Image: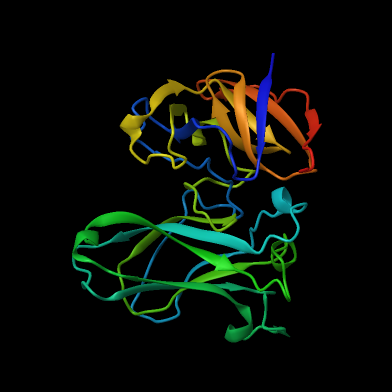
Length: 285
């Protein structure tokens, strides 16, 4: 029997809160996250790397592989998040700026359409290199807001659009990898695109605990970890997993119809999704 509980909005009347996290290891330390990963809107990123040079505005990545199909029906989304790994060599200059810029070929800014830099900039990011960064690979991310007066997410990026990622400084030797573009302003762990993802890419363990604090802990030892046996899909998109056929669907919109499916996981093998269960949330009184 499949059992799902749905909660609309952020207001919870319960005094006890169930906290859920995901990871790739049984102790929760590898790939720990309290947010289930979104799929990447960019394809071909799994083995994609680039090294910065001493030339300002050099292109790091140029992609016409925006995988937009999964978010076609989610109209009106006004934010997305960009993240990437970067290795900072030991000889990098502390205090120097690591900067990248995203350009969308058909992006419309401030009511103007064109191909010049001003009209095609989607977002940009700066990070000042610290002593603790040297010789390490770190993950950085930044949210991108889209001016909804002119564009929404579903119309700003189409399958045929392309994204150019370029360096904004002459800081050389930085190695970029595992780039990710995803809907929403919250960064989730790196994942490939919907057309490239395999079962082994998803978190393998689910951790839970209950307390009276609404905020989830970021300490893996706080959670009771178990191997994930089931993955839950909401309107065809993975939203979490469970060791049992019981799962809380949170932040649902009132008066909205949804479809839920579940698949069974055995190691790196995932079953076909179950038949869809349709339901509609009630309107607030």
